Length: 499
Ligand SMILES: Nc1nc2c(ncn2[C@@H]2O[C@H](COP(=O)(O)OP(=O)(O)OP(=O)(O)O)[C@@H](O)[C@H]2O)c(=O)[nH]1
Image 1 (spheres, rainbow, N blue to C red):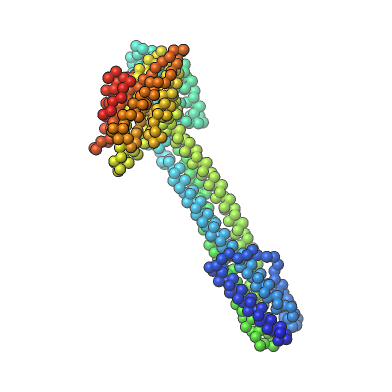
Image 2: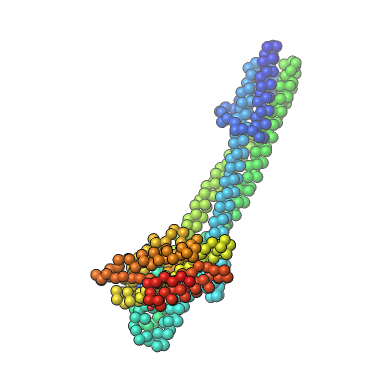
């Protein structure tokens, strides 16, 4: 090597070493690096030197200028390593987030208590499905059916009403499978007005079916949740292993990077003022060392690829799990919504009202912002049913429910309390402003242009309302509203009474 080549080589080597230092520093803290290029310069260079060393030849004059390219290759390799690390980080984040979401869903969805054989627990579990109201209504019907058997009612209408009420209760149940099929069959039987003495047994069968339906729903939920939980557990386990393996790979490759950089730096140092033979002797073991590292590097790359493949598969599995959990959550949401909606009027039902009243009551205790309860009962509704039939009565109920909803503010809450009675919660309306919206509502109902069997019919409603007062419970406030309603009825109906 002549002087000029020496100087040039030294310059190139110092440039290589600078680059490597920068790459390694970057690797630890720095900015993203460019995409890796193609080619295996480090390997080429190694083969060139190693071949020369074996043949005891001088290194090719064009071997050393290859070093900057070599540095670039190393830089690219390290950049790949950094991207890999970022990918692990992302995956760790992604996996963590998804696992968390799945766990939340699991919690949300975990509405099912552990299975139990005893009826009491079965009944208690209905609570979780929003069915207790319906079961108690069925028990009430059972009582009425028994009473009718003991002393047949003077009016056959009472028997028809009981059949009708049972049909409506079945309407509100949303069971599928065998339970759903049997419920539908009983509903058809009720349409044919079965003999009064068959009704008690029918009521009991309905209660059994509700319990059975709940039990099946609960088993389904438990099966799904157990499976989901198991998958999440496996996923978490594999994820943890992969991450630590990824980290080990990363560390090993970073170590190799440092090692190669050290070897190159040493070569650079030994180049200064060395004869070509001494240089050869100095470089040879280092090249062997680099060759060894390259072999290891190759194996690491293969392991890294298989790790990435596994992570990809896990990511895919997580996505599928997420979708499955989401579908399940939606199914539960729809079921829950159905449980809180009155099937006839499509407004909230009594169960929803109880929940909402509790919530508003707790808010009221905390913030003391005005909260009013109003009970609205349609006047002489029995007459409508008697004169025009139950279907006409149903239609009237639907229209009245819609009118109440339209007449109130978005923030107010309305539910069908049962039969022809509605309950309304008015939020943030003080005493002096309570009269106006309720009077308007009473008037809106009176103005609905009903027409049954070609006859123009006016339907009115009575309303009793009250504001919550210090010392009130939800029950005492509801009772006061009920008393006010009673007074409105006695004052001639189509009245509003505020207590
Ligand atoms: N069509 C229909 N009728 C219902 C429904 N729920 C309850 N009813 C009827 O509503 C009527 C309520 O009658 P009553 O409690 O005597 O009251 P009313 O006739 O409205 O008289 P007042 O409330 O005293 O003004 C009964 O005939 C019930 O059958 C329903 O979902 N659909």
